[in-house]
Image (cartoon, rainbow, N blue to C red; front, side, top):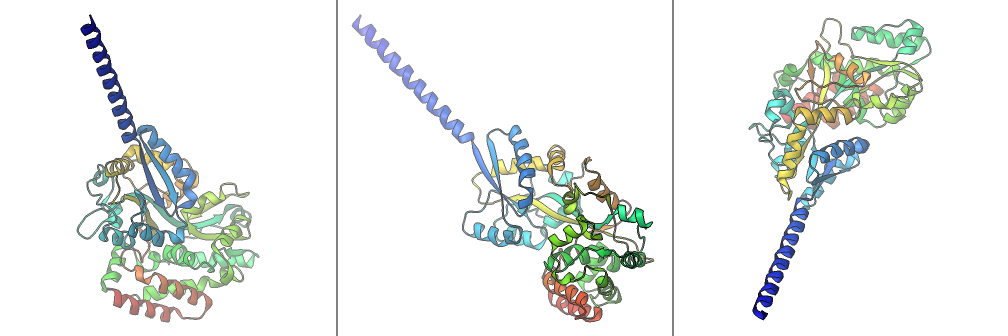
Length: 416
């Protein structure tokens, strides 16, 4: 009897041990399944939208939490590099197109995304190229593009009987008419510098020098940046200077938005990302493509703006790859298109329906027209700062269009 009780006691202890062991393993597995990822970005304005997107993903992957931690846009490149150099970089991060992104991939920080499921199937070669090395390796999954166009006050146009210009000459005539009627034609200023180059000049430049094939000819040296077409593009900036706000030298980008939003300026050459700023405007507004000079085709600057990649040193490569594969799927892109801010357009080949009428108006401008990235991004990014200053000097009358073009060709020759 004692032997039986003793055996029973041992059996109970074994069961208890097994139960404890099973419970411990279950807890360990639960802890192992909980994955926390951090996503870096320069789009601080998109925090609410991205949190919404990441919440949608968590519904599919309950064990994976992705925290969106953006950086002040002008500081992103330097901050991200410091983090990556110090081993504290995010697991997922926004990747700049062309050279800035390639640099981080070549330095061993961005992972190779070439084998992410869906990437090569769901994106065109043109949309993959900005995040691709010369050897064909992909260092990010395309996420969104932006477009450039002229915002115009429909209320003013209707009141004054004005029409959308079809040529650059018509555009200058429109500005002259608006000025004669007492309106400030254009809201653009130069105090923040970047916007007059990125948004205005690079937005209209393809109309004067041509699209992607012509850009490649300038990059190779087959065409020169001081040819008659490039000089004409700088002359165009000189011609619009008198239609900018009074004291445009001190007008910031935010000031420009406010001038248009308060109807103090009738036109604003800007990017699609600003469309949401005017959602509550007290007037009707619309968009038109900046037209080309008479006899030339109008070309839209439709810029591949951002992609998402993952850190080669992350502890969770599998989870990062799964998230990127979701973004590269029609399902993920469809959800992203609904939560992205107005004016950021999915680059996937799948059919995407946008709900905002102005977003669709932007995209409609592309129909039947050639599009290209901002001129300096693919090969001439070292031209960015000097070209920015050249545009501003031409606007201020401190440099002639020919001088500006000559300077650009001198610098370009050293880059080629």
